Image (cartoon, rainbow, N blue to C red; front, side, top):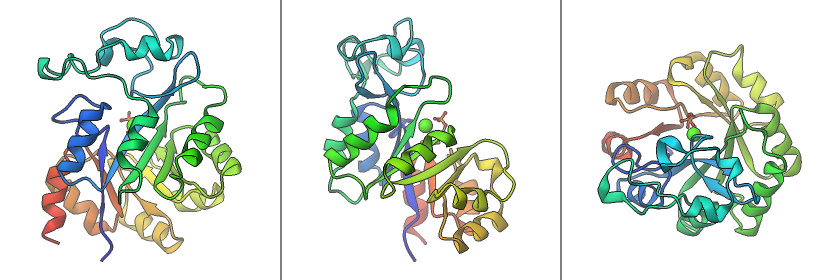
Length: 243
Ligand code: G3P
Ligand code: CA
């Protein structure tokens, strides 16, 4: 049986500050086979990894990510909010994460955080970075902004895409096929056994998010999902080890 992808949501975000290098590194130690992270653009056009569009929750500053230069973002502390032990962690650049996982058997799920902010040129920049690092086979791009994923697919047919969605969609596998997406990334409540099977029959994987509960993980594996996005990769690794 092919492995169930164990995709660490923002890294090992249950035990480390989300979307930091320490969280990514720790997730690999805990058994993740993939990493999910959120990509935004600094005001001077650098790809950075942070979930919220604003800085207050995880970077201890006011204002928007999009309005700060890369240097300004790098001077913020992305770890102290979580615990004093992590003070000094930085907002990573996408390049740093590529450097960590490139050439390893690790799936990299880059979520384009372009639902609220429409970052001009983001698709081109992210594709250029993926190609520069020869990461085409390792990356899967996802977004709640499906038009952006279509744009990515037009620019780079060789890079996989995954549709993020919160509510149930009508025949999501047919919709994904039309958009040439390789995977569905539904909220955990929007998954059914029939849809997982119908998607698989079209070669489309299902990777629901964000599942931290052992029983729910087992239920989804029994439904046939090909991966799970989780804050606790150690829990999923323990479960899949006994399969
Ligand atoms: O990729 C799944 C999940 O990360 C989407 O929601 O808000 O955690 O980015 P969010
Ligand atoms: Ca995300």
